[in-house]
Image (cartoon, rainbow, N blue to C red; front, side, top):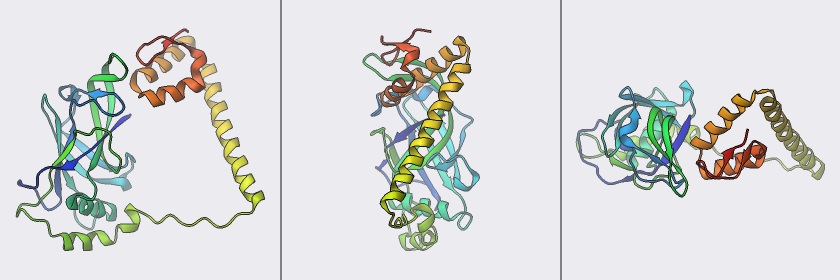
Length: 256
């Protein structure tokens, strides 16, 4: 599943929204900072998407649901948070988005059809919307939260703060101060992390070696076609022996 992080600066507060509803632009045709484009009219959706926290696909991290509307110019989502008291994390997220403290969203999607963009990047002409996540960091500067007030035109911030108080630690848990370690202990931790990374690397190498040439081609081609420039560069550092260096679509062509 791919993810695109979208900015959502507040531009309006009017509208017929419930106390636990906001409206956002989930996607538009603006080229994002990764150089990619999601074509809004290519969005495949049932009209509903779950709302998750930071793309964590668990029931515990579900904050509600969204009604999806697709047009040629953008994909809109009417987000409804879980009822008060059902989830501390949903209560905290509702307060933060209603207050304008957090403004960003991210679409989790499955690429269906795409084409390379001249100069780098990918234009996804058809894609399936799987979920919409509430996040902190944005990528697409054009996406916006277009409504966040309730039906009366006002948000009772004091009430929302009280509701969110119980969720403070769940949404933004305090990072415990690590206990002091001796030099020998620090060396042991570093050695363990290096060994774990090496084991993961070797496991990946063995898995690719067990694949047939056709399976390897499919794996690498799919990865190169759907990832951003940074991810592809990291991929090639590890698996470049499977590719040569000519654009298609990220500067590499399979040689298997």
